Length: 186
Image 1 (tube, rainbow, N blue to C red):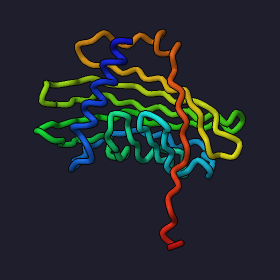
Image 2: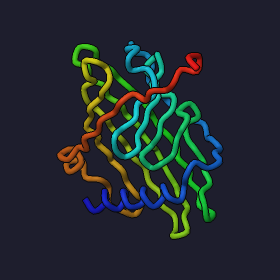
Image 3: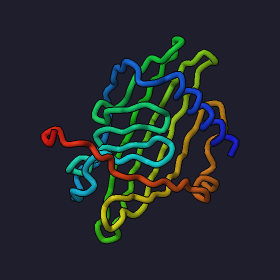
Image 4: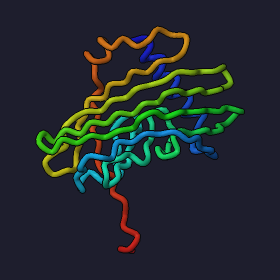
């Protein structure tokens, strides 16, 4: 629990330092787009807490994501380098980002792997990785995705996350599709 609080505190602090800054991307990614994906899930979905966002494509792949750590990543490019204020920098390297939908149960599962992150801030360097899993049913009307979120975040120099504690305490989130005005309608 201490580790989760430490990670959350670092995220809040770093989000203040790193905003939407100039970005230089690094290459490496894997997406799972070989499953049939329903049209009602295509688009941008955002969470009610913790700033998560996913852009699902027609083939079920995730093309972009907004991570709770505050950065927006083009998944195809595999990572992100950003410069923040006060000489801060961040490097984020993505692993697999996959979505899987089961039409029988209406269960949507998403896996986001951040293989490595390194943030240099005025207080020092923070390095680690995280594995985030989202799983839950999509409503009958296709407008709400209620998930349990499991975050296995680790900061170098701390104890590894305890899976038993994480799995016993999933974080409930509600995702909804972002309504983007149609440019042709204007």
